[in-house]
Structures are given as structure tokens and as C-alpha cells.
Image 1 (cartoon, rainbow, N blue to C red):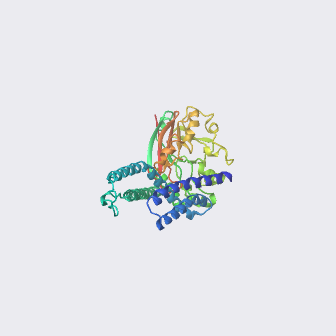
Image 2 (image 1 turned 90 degrees about the vertical axis):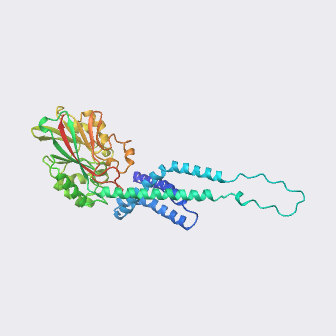
Image 3 (image 1 turned 120 degrees about the vertical axis):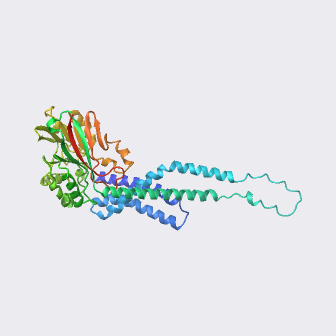
Length: 414
């Protein structure tokens, strides 16, 4: 209970500060005191409350909050990025305006000496010697409004493009990965890999049906679902997950838990997926015998499992120890960072997801701070790591720079 309250409090503080900044740049700087500034302030306050309300409300079953809340979260993110990026050009433009106004003002002339004993009022100053104090404020207002319009239109356009991408069909990518230990007879073994389907408030059964149909068209030898299938309980999403029963492959369909399974009732989902015909690999491995050769396929629980008390933590020794080192091993692990431990056991290839490829540029730059590989093929301490972008999304139904993806991994004999 306390961690949840701390999360909500932290979220409210961060979103409050962001909206305070947005209010200053989009409302205070672009309006004069009066009705429109008051309306803008109230709107900013409502939107600031919408973000934490959406996070908490969707967990409590108030799914109607998901679309407005998550869409605003995406627009808010891009407004923040754009306005921060424009701070330096704005500061330069303001400095130039100040200098131009100062240069346009005439230099004050020395006062003429008054004649002793002269009567009558002094002559008024010449009209062209009077400063125009409203030039600079009016130009500042115009600059602020232009910046706000540019940021607003760009943020809205990027969000619209991202919605279309996120809700569209996942792209089918093919990648060939050579493994030194792979028997020549197994050259070309194909593993259909998908992650981060994220069934939940915004994606349901039709999403699953489309993914299953796309995978089945690949005619793969093995299907690997590497975590984050759901954002909700079996009672809420069991019907949406039902089409997984139709997955087809020559040597079975396999699943490993992602961090979101531990927020969604992992024990029930393990049983449900087993009922649907997917083998949940919980710190274990199995042999894939194909084309006269043998490959070890292993799977570990997500690193999030540690400390939850809901399932055994990731146990690499249990999954990878005491095996024939002459055989190649492919490890299914939700988070790419698992490769740091997997490499100690001589894993040839790790298949992962979790990152969503960054999902929303430039958020991918932050993901690099936590994960060794964000998207595509990389290497960690001698272990090859392939990270698929995922077929769904979390939070905002937006993808920019990271299209939803299903990958056909083709293993090649080196």
C-alpha cells in the first residue's frame, strides 16, 4: 500500500511541475490578464489531475479514463520536449528584440537652460523623443504565441502519427543470426518472436487475433512470446487472450513472464497460458530436436519477480546450469539486461522485449541508460541479444520511431 501511495504522490508531483511549466509557456506568456488566462489556468489544472487519475483509475477498472488520459500524456510529453528544446532559441530571440528596441529609442538630449525670469510653461518634448514602451512587450507576446502555436501543432501532429502507427498492424521483420554451435542440419531454424502485446484497457481480443494470424503466416518452427502479454487479471482479459490457443508451430509455443505479469496476477496467468497451449518457461529449459540436431531452449522469470513473493526470481543456474556445453542454447528473457547474467553461462543468443524500441522518440535515449540493447541485434559480454520492439504499447497508444513488430529469427550455422 505504501509503495503505491508513494508512486501516486511522486507522479502527481512530477506532472504538477510539468503542467506548471506548460501553463507558464502556453498560457501566462501568451495571454494578458483576464478571462482567457483564467480559462487556460483551469484547463491546465484539470489536465494535471487527469494524468494521475488515469494511472490510478485504469487500475481500478475505470477504463473510460484511458483514452483521454493517455492521449493527453503523449501530447504533454511532446509539448514538454519541444518547449524545452525551444528555450535557447527563444532566449536569443528575446535578446535580439531588446537590443533592437533599445537601438530604436532616441538618445535623451540635455535639457536647455531656462531663462531667468521667463514666464509661461516649458515647451513640451518633441513627439519623436518620446519612448514607445509597449513595443518590446507586444513583440514578446507575439513571439510567445508563435512558439506556442508551433509547439502545439507539432506535438499534436506527432501524436496523431504515433496513434496511427501504434494501432496499425505490426510489421514483420526477418533477421538472420549465426550461431557457432548450431548444427549444420539445423541451419535455417526459425523462431517467431513477439513481446509486449499488452492486452488491457485499449487493446483486446481483436489485437490478439491479428497477432496470432500474422505469426501463423510465418510457418515458424518455434513461437516465443517473451513477456508483458497483459495489463490486467485473467477475469478481465482471459477472453482477449483466448486466440493464443490458435498459435501454430512445428515444435511448440513458449512464454516467459515480463514485469507486467507480476502486476496482473502472475500465478493465474501461468495456469491460463498453460491451458491455452503455451509452455511457460520458469527458470527451466527444454530440448528442441529438429532436422537431426538438438538445440537447448531456456527461459527465466523476469528480474521483477525478485522480492515480489509471487514467483521464484530469475534463476540462471536452474535454467542454464548442468547442460551440454557443446549444444547451442537460446534463452528467452523479457528484459535485455538479463544478458549480463546469462553471458556468465555461455548463452549463445538471448531473445528479449521490454523496451518497446523506445516507443516514443526521444524516450529511447533514456531506455539506453537502463538496458544494454534497445532494439535489434546487439551483444553483451559475448552473448548475442536480439530485442524486438513489441507488438503493443504501454500507456499512450502512440509509437513514434519504433513501429510495432513481430520478428522471425532465423538461426544460421556459422
